[in-house]
Amino acid sequence: MTSPDLPAELKAALDARLRGFSRNDAAERSASISKTYRDGGGSGAIRSETDALAYALARMPATYAAVTASLNALCEIHPEFAPISLLDVGAGPGTASWAAAEAFSSLQDFRLLDANDALRKLAIDLVSDSFRLRKAVYERGEARGLLSRTEAADLVVASYMIGEIGDAEQAVLAALMWAKTRDTLVVVEPGTPAGYARIIALRERLIAAGAHVGAPCPHDGKCPLVAPDWCHFTQRLQRSRAHKQIKGAELPFEDEKFAYVVLTREPVTVRPSRVLAQPVVSKVEVTAKLCTPTGLTLARTPRRAKADYARARRWRWGDAVRDER
Ligand SMILES: C[S@@+](CC[C@H](N)C(=O)[O-])C[C@H]1O[C@@H](n2cnc3c(N)ncnc32)[C@H](O)[C@@H]1O
Picture (cartoon, rainbow, N blue to C red):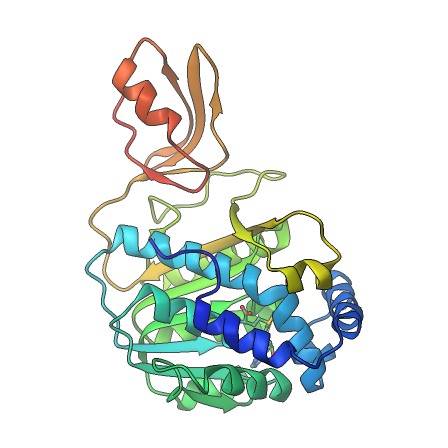
């Protein structure tokens, strides 16, 4: 499993850019960018080199952690997968490419696409000293146009991107990303009801186009969750000193909530159940909300079933588990 924390090489590259850069200025800009996101705006507010760095310092650790958790779920379900080429759609500062490089040592060909010039410049700067990523090709422009011209890749990733485009454009982009996916498509969004709704819409659309779900769902059927419930996960990551200063945060860690889907061309052979919330452990039993191949269940494992209880006690929210009771 790949660590959810930024790799040392990326941390060092970010720290180097931070030198000579006012933390207060970064904190202000990052707060204003976060407010734009909360108000429903997108990355359009990121225009300068300083904005891009403020965005990367504030958000890159968390989006990196969410992409890594999603790629870890993919690796668990499809351990022999060894992609050579990656397409990172809406790459921003290159977050998903860094995460994929860590998760798959097989990757050699990295292609990144994005409309934002400030984020593109920062991404190119950050990879300049990286042995794996320095030859990455980063194209600037609208995803739709760039995707229609680009070659297909083994692994296609869109992280925290589709929320920035309208519903109709999301449908077009989903089809285009799938058309450029040789093996696996991973889409990650914030773990909000709206992020989940976008993931579900894309999932349904692409299943209809022949895709299979690798994770988190253990089936290709309709999502059994009913509103106000929604499928999302959480990933804990460490906060650096700079990150704490910029976010004005006290805690040394952050929990990033995310929603994701892994779609594959070939059906996966194993379909373990997914733990949909942190299980409740009592002296009597472990109660876990599971999405299983046959639907949603509240699995109760009594203490008297010693081996099963011991196994269920170790279950964590987001885990793929075999419910063998
Ligand atoms: C929230 S950022 C996420 C960046 C990166 N994937 C990450 O996880 O950190 C969304 C990115 O999508 C890009 N984007 C949004 N709409 C786009 C479009 N239509 N074409 C190309 N890029 C787009 C933005 O420029 C921005 O860099």
